Image (cartoon, rainbow, N blue to C red; front, side, top):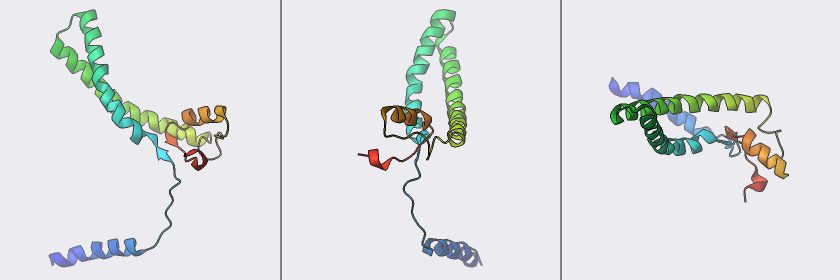
Length: 129
């Protein structure tokens, strides 16, 4: 009986993989994937600086200060960055920051593209090299 249960999902998977489809490599790049690791690494010096400042200003004990600074920064990073990315992505979509947005032919267009397309960098094949 157990073998028959696994047969249907396997047949569905094989059938889907057997169906040819067109691959598209020009979808752009979600920049959160690129930025997230760096933001995680930067938590360490940010927390250290905050601990130093808070201890100097308020004279709080080291352990409690590290706990509060680390927790608040981790929560704000884990929640704030994805929320900001979604808001910027919606703004980019609404204002045509993607295809049909600023041309990267000029310096102004390149500056606009790098800021306007911060959440989702559109492919610019002509400038790839």
